[in-house]
Length: 275
Image 1 (spheres, rainbow, N blue to C red):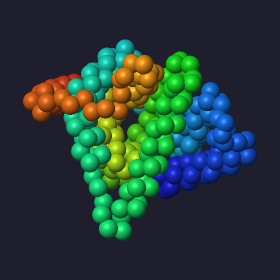
Image 2 (cartoon, helix red, strand yellow):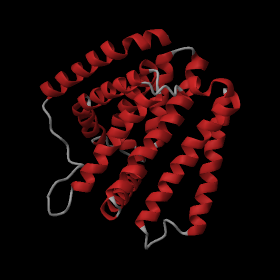
Image 3 (cartoon, one colour):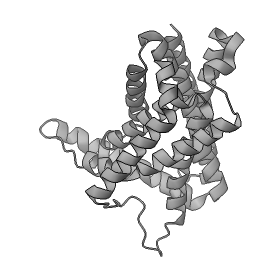
C-alpha cells in the first residue's frame, strides 16, 4: 500500500508539473537555460523528494529519522567518504559496462525502436551540454548534482528500497530491484548497465552505511564529476567527456577487487545486521 501511495504521488506531481511547464513554455525555444535548469531541479524536488517525505510523514511520523536513516553523526560522514572511494574505484568497470551497453543493437522490427531511443538519448545529451555550457557552474552543481542526489536517494533508497525490504524481508532483492528501477527511471536503455551498477552500489551503501548521508554524498560526487567534466570540456580543449576511458582489463579488475574489499571491510557489518 505504501509503495502504491509513493508511486501515485510521484506520478500525479509529475503530471501536474508537466502541465505547468507546458503552460509557461519553459522548454519551448528559445530556451532560457538558467530558468530551464532551475525547473529541472524543482521537478526533482516535486517528483522524487516530496512524495518520499509525505509517505514518511504519513506512515512513520513517530520515527521519521529512523525510517529515512537521517543519521548525520561524524562516523557516518567517514563512511560516506569510504562510499565515495568505492564509487571511484568502480569507475573503470562502469566505463567498461558503458561501452558494452552502448554496443547493443536490435534487429528486425526493433531496429526502428533502437534508432528512436538513441535519437532521444542524443537530444537529452545535447540539452545537458547546453545547460552546462550556458549556466553558471555553481547553479549546475546545485541543480544537476546536489538536488538530484538528495531527491533520488530519498525516493529510491529511503522510499522504494526501504519499503521493498520491509515487504520482501530480503535486503538483496530490495537492492537489485530498486537498482533496476533507478536505472530505468533515467530513460536511457543503452546506458542501463552502468546506472544499474551505480544503483546497486548506492543500495548496499544505504543498508551498510545506515545513513542517507552516505548515499547523498556518494551520489553527489558521482554527479559532480560529470558536471565538472562537461563544464571544463570546451570546443577549444578538444576533450570529450563522453569518450571511453579505455582502461585495460588488468587495472579494471584490480580496481573492482579493491572496491569489493573496501565495501566488505567497511560496510559488511551493517549489511549483516540488516539481514
